[in-house]
Length: 249
Image (tube, rainbow, N blue to C red):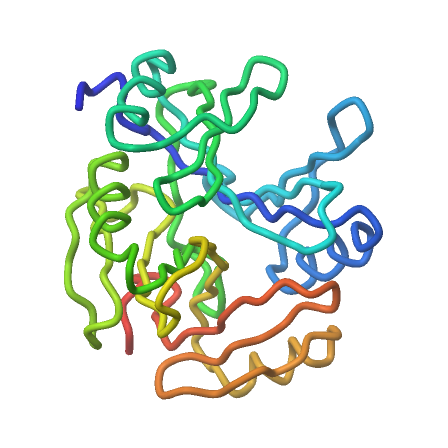
């Protein structure tokens, strides 16, 4: 992939059904501890959560869908080349919003091709208690190999084994290079690829209680992570990763 077609930055979008918008905005601002940008878009349907340091990577969008979802924005210098590269790798066009091409991965996960707004973006690793720093792409078994190959190629990141065989991490060559990407092989044999956000937390039990006080529900507790459900329905995880290094403690 040419350097101009490769993503220079990733944005994680929380797509929220309109009826749950205000509740979701309040929840994620409190859960992350981040300030909210002013709304933008023709209906005020977009906003950004602004981290304490560095450049933003977490955004929210009000959508007409009945259920919450996740999508990624891939910022590239040469968007036309990025779109062609994605198609060559097996992505399919979904629609265009204004001038932004929206595509689906081979397994169906939505992502957008956006243009880099400025150079020198910096992902700060400076919040020791908690940070929403990772997207986990959930992949049915029959789609696993194709989807891992697709995301590795389109992101220009190298697949690395994780602690358990059902996970693969896409390693960023720059330790401060932005949003982390984890791939998870589901028990489901088939179905559409989906995704959820992961928070790295220093004290998982304490953080679970804090999120429950904000209205979230605990869905399941596992060895290295806890599955939560936000008040408006979005599933996400609290993980035993160091918020600064991103590694499992």
